[in-house]
Image 1 (cartoon, rainbow, N blue to C red):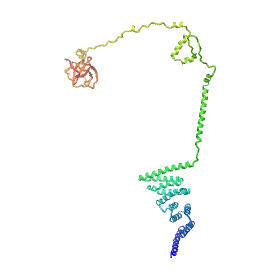
Image 2 (cartoon, helix red, strand yellow):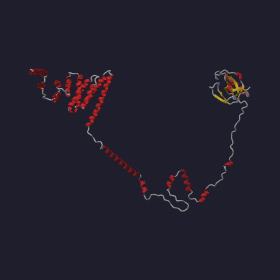
Image 3 (cartoon, rainbow, N blue to C red):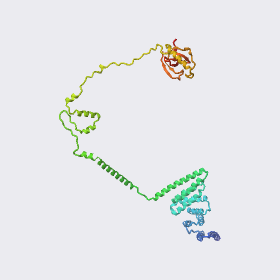
Image 4 (cartoon, rainbow, N blue to C red):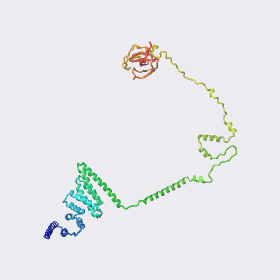
Length: 457
């Protein structure tokens, strides 16, 4: 009974597989080669399901997907990768990435949905990156760039830049492709209105990746350039500098020797004039004989004059020299002829007990002064306006009780025209408030404070 049930179940399962096989062949009827390959793979799958034995390993399945990937048969790749993912207990990250690539090319699934399996698959592949060949690494990097460019169409998605950075880990040769993508990203940021925070975040991501691309390019160029030994250039440059210094020094010695040739030869010649010390008897001391021209050159102006006088008297005897000197005259003592100093101007003493100011004692001058006042009054506006005058003290004598100044007008703002000491006597013409109008012997008018003077009579 149980054997019959197992046979029935196996027959039913074989029919279901045959139905899937017929539908798959009908969908790919336009491509005979692809259909044949699918038939072969489906038959092998059917045999595995029926017998329960594995006739091919998972590596061979990945190789088949790789061949379809290389031939760009995206629809076949999609079907087989889906079957491989459903059949295997442990999903292969490369198989999952092949499925993502086929969906991208067929545009059947949005990139936002494909980003999750692509993210997990590439993370797993990074752990075994040393086992991947260069061509496959480059294809993985291009897949990541394509998914990232589809994701970054809106500023709110930042997983695209994560894919950009991860693509550089698989292959540095995609840097040029990334630069073109970054140009488009920058245009998107510039053209977007509003969204200030999102634009700032995206601009920071662009700048960070641009800086990373620059560093990666420098590392790549440095690794490709042959190593040049620079250490050998330093000794050469030092040797050249030493040689140049030696040549300059030799030239300077030769040039200096040529310029001072005569002086050098004169020092070592036998005919050169040498000073000598003649020994003479008597009281005179031996002195070195110096050439005359050299001695004269070293003399100052006063020494030269004395030297000429000595030369002029060189031929005279002692008696003749003594006779040529002037006779000594007796100089009288300065204390005998000194006289006491005399002052040419005698100090004048002034008697201040008698009146020195006013016109009381000079009637003619008083009359003249009155005439001048009459003339001034005939021209209105000719004299400055003064305060009202009290004429009660006209022509009276006053005595200064405190030193004071004579002002040009009855105000402290006037000009000081004279200074009167204590005890001086003045003639007061009138009184203007706190000021007394006074007149000098020459007829000049002025004003003093009334508190500094008192009436005599």
